[in-house]
Structures are given as structure tokens and as C-alpha cells.
Length: 322
Image 1 (tube, rainbow, N blue to C red):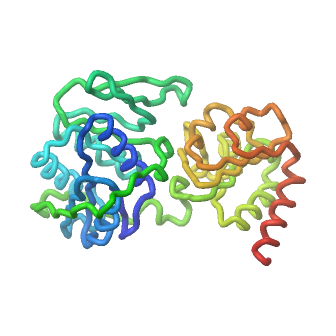
Image 2: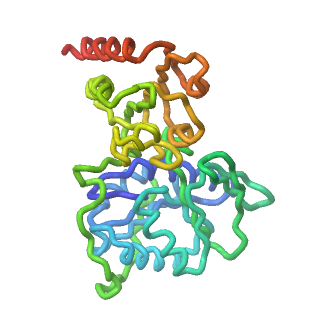
Image 3: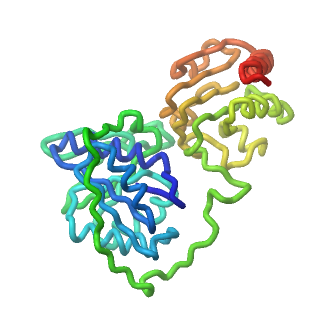
């Protein structure tokens, strides 16, 4: 489970929910692994989930993320525990160290999976190809452990099972030598003032070509400010330079799973839907009643966004007493 500076990456809970389902399909126990330095409180928090144990991997060299230290720690743990599957959230951090870890162990790593099914006592995982236009079913053929990362939003953290009693938190004895860590951590990606990790946003207001002109983004920004939301965009918006590329949502951008996703002037091309399909509640505003976005929306408003959005923003501010 991924944490940074004592705060959970929300995708960790999605990965744990996936692991619970995988364990149920195999009839196998699930253990959660918490890594870092001084993270016992986080391990106790993870122990509230329905898991067999929480394994605590602590070392001063794990205080700040480096692929060398994380791989060294996990290699020791995996060699001792011999798990069948290692389930990870598909985060920037995991994308960095997981291929290195799997290669060091001579095992396979299947990234960005969206589903699985059990067949004949083994598992078949599904991942998307060609920007979400096709799905591929893939199974592992080789000795365990097998490494799998879970795409954001593919498994809901709301479905995470809680235990009747807290699970046992059991420290694992690590021995990491300073010489094993050849990389030095610098400023973390999400700390940059010019970048944003939309995968962590609980509310997103996304805008598409229906906005027509860059100057009209002010209407969107006011709604986002009223909701305390992040602003995202479809590929055409970011390709035009109207929003930074790190705010692009879709198969060639970020995959998000907020509690609330408001789509403004977005038609709903498959490439965009792939990036937001895990959203808990989707509200679509589009003047085209036949726009594909309405097929995935929980609530739809057919109308001109330049009429609807200012009125919606005004009502939200009234409700907030502003």
C-alpha cells in the first residue's frame, strides 16, 4: 500500500479491494504491506480492513521513496513470504519500481489491469489496448509470485471489506545497506506547483470542445472553485494548449476515479470515457441529447453550458452562504 509523507495514496485502497476479491476467488489469505519509516499509525489504519495480517516494513532508508530501497525491501519480504500474487496500485511510484522489482526476481509484471476472473484455479487478468478500443485477457505462465498493478477506478474503494476486529500488525525484519541505494530522492512530482495528480482529486470538473474558446474557461473555473474541484480536460482542449497536458483525462492522459465528475461540453469519445469510467457519480452537461457521454452519466442536463453552468455555480454559492 502506497503512502507518502504519512498520507495514503487513495489508489492503495482500490488495490486492496481488488486483492480482497482476488483472495476470495482463490480461497487464499490476503496480507497488506505498509512501507516507510515511522508509519506504524498507517499500518494500524490498514488493519481495519479484512486482511489476514498487516506486514510493516520500516527502515530509515524507506522514509523517502527510492526505487533501490523499495526494491531491496520488497525482495527480502517476497523471498521470505513467497506470495502467489503481488497486487499494486498503478501509481507513478509503482510504475517506477515494479518493473525493476519483477525483473530482479525473474518474474512477470502485468500493468494497468481493469478486471480479473478465475478459470481452473488460476486467474485471467484484463487490460486495455489501443486506447481502450480493445481488451486483452492475460494469464501468468510461470512460477509465482506474479506482479499486477490495478488501474485507477477499476475497483471501488467503497467495496473494501472491513474486518470484525483489527488485523494483527506484524513487523518484518529488514536489512537494507546504504550502499544498495544508488539514487537520491529529489522534490516529489506532486509537490511541483505546475503539476497536478488528478487521480487524487475527489471532485473534477472536466471540459471539452463545447467550451468553444479558451476565454470561456473562466466559467468552468468559477464552478470548480465553488465546488473545491480540480479542472480537467479532454484531449482536444489540452492539445490546443487551453489547459496543461497534466490535466488531460483519457487513454492518453490521466485515469481518474473521483467521487463526482462533471463533464461540460464533452461528447464522450471512447478515449475519454476510458479515463473517467471509475467515477462514482457522473454529471454531464451537453447541448447534444445524443452525445455518448449521457450513456455513462448518472445525471444529464441537455442544454447550453453557458446557460447552465453560471446558474449552477450561483446556486452552489447560495447554498454555501456566499
